Length: 63
Image (cartoon, rainbow, N blue to C red; front, side, top):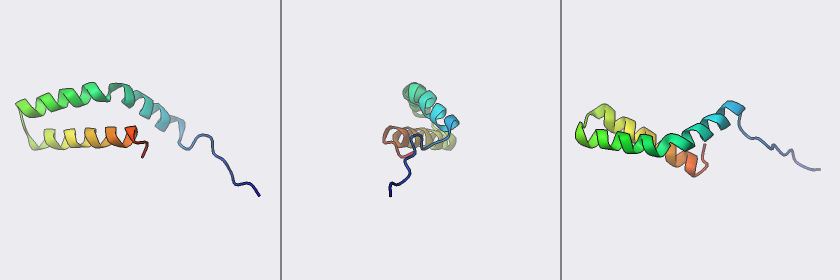
């Protein structure tokens, strides 16, 4: 008996988010990194860490 094969694992909006964020993540991370270096606040550091984590998870296809 063959197992079910799902061609698309995620919902269409998740795939759209991954494609959109995949295009704009490097400029966002660079901008946030410069902003964090110039004006380091706790929020900026957490936001930069969140952006880097999200970018790595998309690049490594974890999400």
